[in-house]
Length: 606
Ligand code: ADP
Image (cartoon, rainbow, N blue to C red; front, side):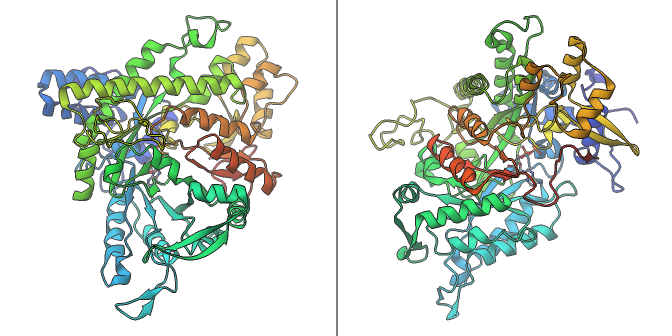
């Protein structure tokens, strides 16, 4: 049969063979036998057309919709922008669930003889089947051993419920594409906080959850002063005890040093920037932490491949800002914002509560990927003041251009329905800082939040760029290709090696085998520009995260890597630095601290 897009005269997608394999495995429509029944080009058109069609709601005719779909198609096939995985998998298909991030409420109702905990479990399964990830706060669950009136029994506590959700995630594989991912959050003032901090120290337990402790400003003050802080029973809202803040902080840091978990979520800071405080407060984030959300809140993500905007008509010696094609970056950012606003209308949400809130606040999450590629192409090290400044500036630009597009959309489509009382609205009660000043200037926006930085775990792979704002993980590794081991070397690196005349196949293989580039043949400036996650000290990781956070509505997905020999004290300093630099959370990983690492250098990857 001829392709449904044969007569559209669309250019072929600019994808490597490897990218086509990844798409076939994870995204393309398949028959009952699991054989793909669409080409990547057909998938991109399916997505582009479905999302463009939302413009019909605002008066666009078929001609205009096709023209917009073509622009969306080019954006994705030239790898300038990609939406999150569920949009690619499900747009224009029966499931129609397009978002990656959800937070579902976990009520204490079971202990009152109601079934709240199980209702949420069912919703979780529905989200997972559609390729979305779920975050939960277990902070409202009464503590273990607390009274249960209806049965005159005792409560089993938040961790038992988290284990229940974990087992269920294990059982329900998602729509044949990916297994569920969850975030579990507990407030630091919950009486079971110590059990929570320890609950993943056995690394074979609760494997379908990332966990973070929600840390309050009051707690951090108590840590700084070496004081006790109050524990509160969520059922009664009574103070039921006290703990030594430093001892708890130490426990968090110790465990993070040992296994990478728990992370921390600075919940008061996240809520300070909550755009719709009149509707409730943030209590949890999505699985990878970049998206604080209200109960029943949802976010659809998309990422601009920022490494693509280095101009080849400006010589390498010029100032970095002259070497970026800002005009093209602006065009892509605006079109991407339009795309994500349309996703809200095209979306079929798994629950009516989610549909309702999504339409009232219209949250979207536009971010970047390919940031490490950008730095490499500019010749600027990630671990340098200039690298951090570039991070700040490119994020500021994305944030502002995305907001302008949101304002432009609002002129024809209207502001989001909850705008009046939101952080952006004119209402006198709109969110204010403790000194009475507005948190944000009045802006007539279509969306309550526009920016975030996602991990881009899958989309960066087929887009062939570095993930999110992470540094390069390695310049080269050995890839198992049809049974033989081949060095797979970063393309920018080989291009420079050729251009500067020090390329040799032997050198590339040595680099891939040993997992670093610190050889005499590699010029000093290249060694600096190609700093990888392992060369970069934890401080630079956090400084970069903080620079991106400065102009980002939501939060940043970022892992701070530590060498294996890092001490507990090193980790503590990073947690404190992240708080001081206004980050909304921290995730750390010490090399080798967990068995079966996903990526490893100097080793084989298939
Ligand atoms: P992708 O590259 O596939 O679009 P990201 O790696 O950027 O996704 O992750 C974005 C968000 O998507 C995560 O924070 C999480 O909410 C969700 N997510 C990622 N991986 C999974 C998974 N395996 N199952 C469910 N949700 C996921």
